[in-house]
Length: 481
Image (cartoon, rainbow, N blue to C red):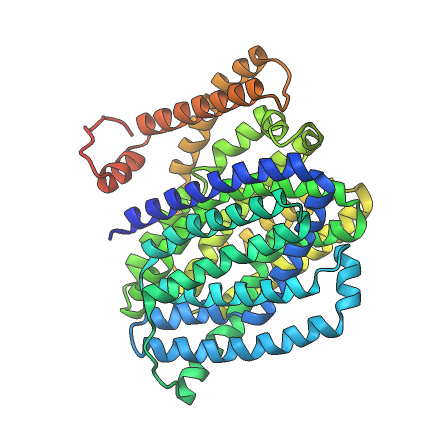
């Protein structure tokens, strides 16, 4: 399967998953309110960080070593044995410090945290193996399956009256379902790992772990900081804003997921020119969805947040800031993806370390100084700093072109979209959570997206070529730049 088709399949799968998650989140926001969502978000952030401790970069190392197509399953079993051992240690730690953990989250959920930790580690291991075996198209399909299964169980448990407990148990179900299907697809045969397999995994993981920390620092540190410094209701509002930003990030994630095994393979074959081309291509489309998302966030952010409930409209002021930070992070992610793909996790380690320190310091300092909006500003500033550092780090090791013309055309198309959307919002009236207002908002968003794609298709020969080369049907040629 071609890289473009793999990226598109990944994107479509992510869109389907996000659509299911979007509808489920609206239900939970309206039924449970911002406060319970705040507890839920903090609990997920805690599990996420425990999960990172349980993987310490091993999932990335499994993907990397298995993608090299030698002794693949020996690396899988080496990774599984290490992750399993770490899980036992972490589970004991949760039981020992259960009092402090429950006090921080706000509810007694330590047993569920252990269950969730087991589920997330299994899911991470098997999904890493799928990517390492170049089965990214299968990995992509698991995302909507995971979120769909999760949403069904969560809704059923919330309807039954379990509220926070139901939300957390349902979340675990999604991970376990995804891990089970991945295991069935792989059916990994046992290959006894040797000391060499463990050493090569650890050699990569000792740098790659910080990449996982970096990714979760971007999406979770602000939640953890807010959980300690502001009310649970504000954390709930902020988590909804982050949910929207996550939707706009999925295309960039799809690109990097599809590119990594290809970059790794070409680097192993010493095809540096091809690696440079893939890097430029990844940067060309990292902001394809986020750039119009920023313009849309400025114009219809209040209307979209109102769908979740009027108490969430307050998040409209931080939404554009976080969307811009997400754009910077998406470019950063592509550069770090290449650094890891060319087997320079040591360089990515230093860039990630800078980003993490900057993000933590900026979040703590700015939240304390200006309130919850400081979390969005701190996250954005640290993403910008990380992007600059990653660019110079990679540029010193790989000659690649910056697709400035293509990015400029995306901004022009987004501004053209805004010129159509703005008058529509003026005619639509004030936002509300009513069905009529929701339908109007959906129409405005869909119309704006159509304008953006049509304008970009007319302006960009590169975009037309990518669409034409990966579309299942023949698309007539259009002259243009």
